[in-house]
Image (tube, rainbow over all chains, first blue to last red; front, side, top):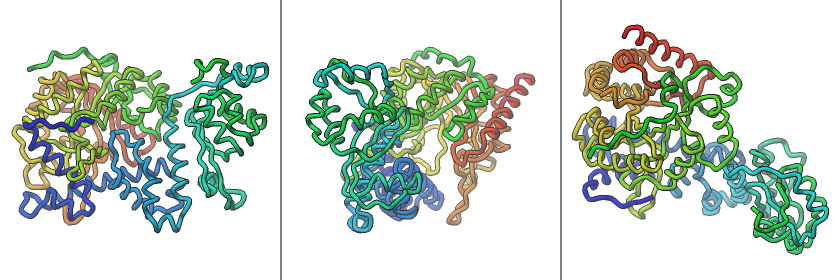
Length: 265
Length: 304
């Protein structure tokens, strides 16, 4: 956004900057220093008004972040999550008016908190996967073309390209990130301690999550880089395409197959 | 320089009844029951994505009702100008939904923090002084938005909890000048007027809040008013201070209903919205409030 200010607007700019400074002041007392110094008319009302705006900001931060990170909230507990949302709001404030898009920096913020990392070393990875799930919800829609899958039967894989669902990505982690996130939705059948690679994608309108197959991250990355099916398979030697294909179609991960890179989405 | 009035919004006539704010908890109920309403109003920013479930639901709603796009993030009074990315997203949504009304607020929302010069968006509606400088900024930004959208914008008066320094005119003079210079129309939130008047009374500045709002309504040029908002508010007692908060979390109070009746008697048909944003009750409660607003409007027509 533009930040240029015309000279005639100086007093107005000062007012706006003072109120912004009050909202982002680390403590309520510092906020009052901006706008409610002793001697200001109706100081008690001004103090209460600033508190109302600051409370609203804290509630906005918590609501926005809570919508994006339910597993992180569950893992750290309500009180810690509130503190985390206030910290992120202060350290990495929203820069646009669509607050649903604010909060992508949570994983990086978590990694700057040594105590939290020591207690919950998997938390930043969980946050990365949850942000991917959250942000894919508003991506452009894409329709599957089931008839195109017949190309896989007859055509040379070197001359075929795959279109994947919106939001498709893989996240490798030393921690059981998929199990940890799914535990918010259902009770896991067993406690997992192994490392996991998460695959996320949007099936229709629904963000989905599962454990990736061996070799799948390299395969999907190559597909998304525009490689042909044959070239993508060559990039992922341990990947079992035949086992992957049917579920990928059924779960809306693979949307269509095309025989020309120009038609590749 | 005065702006030429822009063309009327498509669908404005059919929307000249009572609508409700359509929020997430009521998406399913409303689409299943399709109650009789003149229009639905949604917050534009909740539908800024290129696709997804929320936008699909909005398109389903649009298939049955005129839709008003009410923004909370443009920051028309922000000295740094309107965020071009935000405006482009709004323009895409307007093209897709073809709303009956497009509106935002007399406020600032974003700016640069002192110190390391961080640009921030507050996610809140922050007050402006009724000054010539604020008017210049608002008119400039409203014109940018109207030029991009190629349609008229409605701009809503604000409830405020801190007093801005540097007022140079009354709120009515400020709003009139804004509409006349920019070519926008006004979205008059009667509850916001009443909340501000109640808080002024609590500060000892006014003897009678309702009389103060009546005076404001009498002074307003009805030709400039394109929509009315009605909502509830909450009295908060904290730290020895009594403050009225415009939380959109209650039924409309009796005083605001009386003020609305007066406005309708004087002004005639104007699209009216029941807003409810926090602690949402069942849809039936909003429909009950909408029915009451429609009854007030009908009585006003019979009286006229």
